[in-house]
Image 1 (cartoon, rainbow, N blue to C red):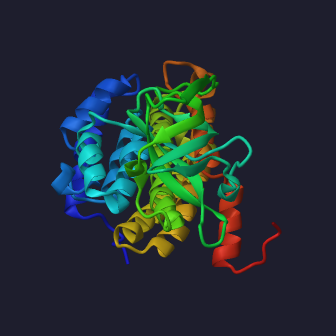
Image 2 (cartoon, rainbow, N blue to C red):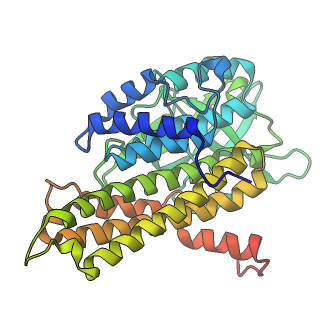
Length: 377
């Protein structure tokens, strides 16, 4: 079982990352922060040392993202490039793929996006229609993806497609590395109300021809390889949400300590203090589940990590939304000003409830997989 208190190494890492986040602050430049985090070895902390990484795991990487988020400067692409793509390639890639991608992902000079979501599939990965067919030694990909982060700055996108099983004729998931300049690989920016350094895109794959070595891992082990990336994604989304919630809460606590309307600071009133205390408790509980999920994943327990990662993502998303809402409410009109940096989080905090999987689908997972209840679909 995971330890209930942090190791000295983790505490030291947390302090160092928090200092980096404080130097950049809420009005950060994502490119500069990415570069600084890379130089300090934080971006590749989960990747093998033999490829320039830190030799740690998702436990360490989630800690980095949480602390940056708590400082008001989260890096969304950490979820995608080192956590999903880096992990999948490190576990299942060929030696050539590892050598080509992992050192660059670790030192921040290369980034990779991840493409799974489709317009008509939603949370149902079994309805993915992006297909890959063989043509001699090559692969030909056709399909569409939506809400794919950071494609414009990524050197390649790890695309989830489906191939036909030669034995059963059924489609099975497979992962392909698609270079950004591949012929037939198009992108269109999706205009979002959400403000962020990373943009969202719709992708089209129109007869995209890829060499045989674009396939990552075993063609017959698609689901295992897919969830090797999706479980870290859920853990890292939890870290993203917890960090965001902590940032909002810290602003509210600071304000409640100093803001005086009558004779005492407003934080002395239980109507203000208790909701903030409750938000803190819920964020701490979510963090414990996140740490458990990361520990199980790093220990090689994919099944256990799947359950815990879903629970962590759910708990963190709920805690984040509540913390942000209470923080804004504590500041009143000031909570909607740009000065305090909370108003934009009203939209951003919803992301943790919606992506990469909705809270309703997590409740489905727990009710079916954990509780053994029958499915309605």
